[in-house]
Length: 390
Image 1 (cartoon, rainbow, N blue to C red):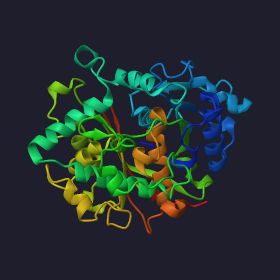
Image 2 (cartoon, helix red, strand yellow):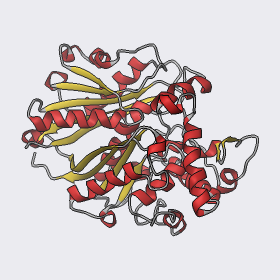
Image 3 (cartoon, rainbow, N blue to C red):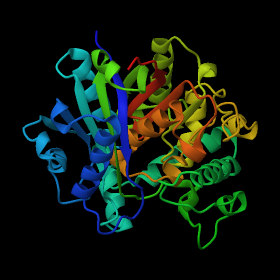
Image 4 (spheres, rainbow, N blue to C red):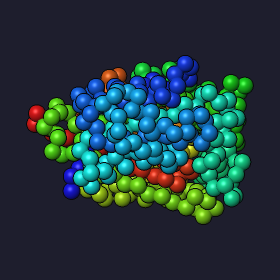
């Protein structure tokens, strides 16, 4: 079976990008990715766009907006993929599947979201569409993840100090990421303390525990094996696993984080590795409690002891397995449809030594975990550099 390889990437800055439309963001990321790959637009066999929308923008049919980049893309098949906050990874996996099926040799994948044209209440309402409407309609995502936190605290004791450590870590990491939404270090004291600038949003989660509402786009170009000789660097998939769990939260064990744990476990098995073989990871920290639960789901700590991963220094920037060197969703930003593609772009940059001040020396095996909803749509990629013979 042919395999897909990432050979080019693009990434806009994340943030409140006034004056840039959804179309502008799509075209900017796609142009950069195609230029970086060194392919002609006419070589693209298919386009996939990850975009959640849910009423956040009026451009409800964005797939063909990528064609605005260049006339050479005209008549290229283009498809929008949506799987809540994992829409970007859904688009990547769809493009990869086309290559593996032999129906495409070169594909363009774009993740994009324009969120800041709505106020916070409007974005909160839009994002709530990714929950189980029969039982959870009208419940905000901060409240949904606060339920995880309250259940975790009830079983394992108050972990507010650990959540503050996670937030401070990711804000510190974002200082090395020029594309991050927020370039402002928030220290442990600020993140741990309720204040007028850091109020409680949904107890026990404060503002500092919540990811940012952002605009932005990211894109990758993938090619099949028989094109690798055309490129001087490539990143391949050692494994790519999707696991979906029940949508209603009442049908899931909130402490076990079963869908994410299944995704990690199956990805490790497919890659023939354990968590100890990873050099770094970009994971879905939509809320600090999510990153804490991910530490356990990915096998960095036993259930209920996620705090060990950060207190030991393991997941810090200078630790053995740093998590979210980019700043994560917490500080890099979370333009929903762009997030999964962004994670793959920044992981690819690490693996070919192009991560700048974020670079982990000698990184050879990276993990991406992108999650849609409250642990419902779970995507885990294990990526590695691929030898090419130009």
